[in-house]
Amino acid sequence: MSGDGREGDRRDDEVRGARRIPGPRGAVDDLDLEAMARPVLPPPGSPAPDGAVPGQGATEADGGTEAVPDAVAEGAGPEAGAAKSEAGPGSVEAGAEDEAGPGDAVAEPDEPDEPDEPAGPVPSLPVTAASAPVLSHQVLKALLGAWALSACSAEETAAVEEHLTECAPCADEALRLRDAVGLLHTDGSLDLDPTLRTRVLDGCLGRRPARIPIPEWATAYDAETARLDALLRDIGDSEWHAPVRLQWFEEERAVTRRTTVAGVIGHLMAVDGLVSAALGLEDPLGADGVTGGAEVPLSPTRRTETFWAATYPPATRAVCEPWRDLTHELIRTASLAAPNVAERSVSYGDFALPLQDALLDRAFECWVHGTDIAEAVDYPYGPPSAAHLHRMIDLAARMLPAALAGRRRAGLAGPARDLVAPGEPGRSLHLEVEGHGGGDWYIALDSPAAVGSPDLAVAQVALDGVEFCQLVAGHISPVEAAAGQEGDREAIRDVLFASASLSRL
Image 1: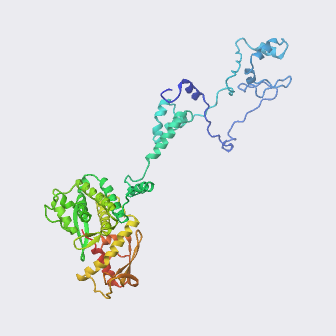
Image 2: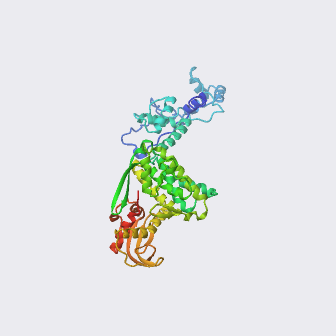
Image 3: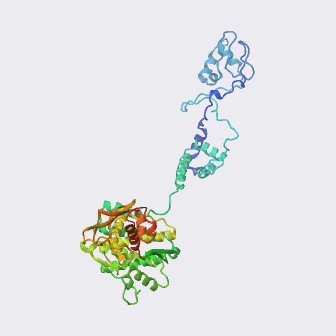
């Protein structure tokens, strides 16, 4: 096989000798019949004029018989010559042979193994000014890539396309190149889908379930730590020092604090140590001598300040590996522990939560601070799944009566109007959360241990699910949060400010 993809000279001769595909035939209406010269036929019996086509329109004067066409004479074989030799001098055939000169060529017989071909050369398309230039096969093959990218000139394009009708290997190569060009034009984002890990795990677990599955109450923490870990793996070393502005709500005002991406991860690891201590694991603040042998504080804010103060120089990418190992160890331990471990108490200093709620709280913190990091490094980061977001909203709604009672003791909320016994229905506010992860909750307004009741609702607040979580995280003001308000204005204000007071560093 030759280097250009064709098999030897015989293939080249076959390609060059093949008939070309004729161009589109013009319609009859396209001809200007008035401008065309009309042929003038000679009168019968007169000799044919010069330039007339032999064998067409000429008749013999004596008998009126048509003359034998030249094509028939040229196609006569040796048998015809022998018949003329045997004929007498008075026959018509003998007279025709006597008139032929000695230098006239005798027609050769057709080869029996060749297919019937029309006599004479195959007509070709007319050559115009826009016709393709004459280029060699190697040049045309080299132009296939540029042709597939539409980077050839008009003359080169015409030459290549004409060549493709004659060369089958080049036509196949042109189709492959055109398909490859189609893969180059994509408008999709190069960032990985944040839900890719979840979808891959769901597919794997659907084929073969895990022997020890993650408890349902720990799946939100597993998903959010995995999403944040994927974000951190995708940023560069310099972006770990990008400034991040943390914000939360204290009493009646918003508070902000500036740190870095590495500082945020250190904050998450410091607070995760509260959960690890409840599970009997090693506290990350005491493992590497961060506290210098002093007692480890329980408050999330004090733990974070202690970690930041003891970390000099400031934390870098190196903080990510200990945080990742800690999250994996928490999930593994919770999965292997006894079923009643979900009710184990986790102390936050001023309050305590069951382990299942504590891990849900940590999942909420991972999402909120993951959003802070994503905004700092300009990275796409969406909200949690609807099921996980619904659980986070439910946790905040269950914590609101105690938060409202704490603000009332501090003189920041209105007085209780109708105290009831624990477990009894009391005056309530209807919290309607719409959209992603939404639902309906009834918040007890007077007694922390009372039960919210739709029959005793005195006000209603409507918010979007993500917007309510931003309010709980202290990222938006309470006066700007509610999309719809109806009923007791004091109750609405107290619940909105209590929701913002759930936020912390």
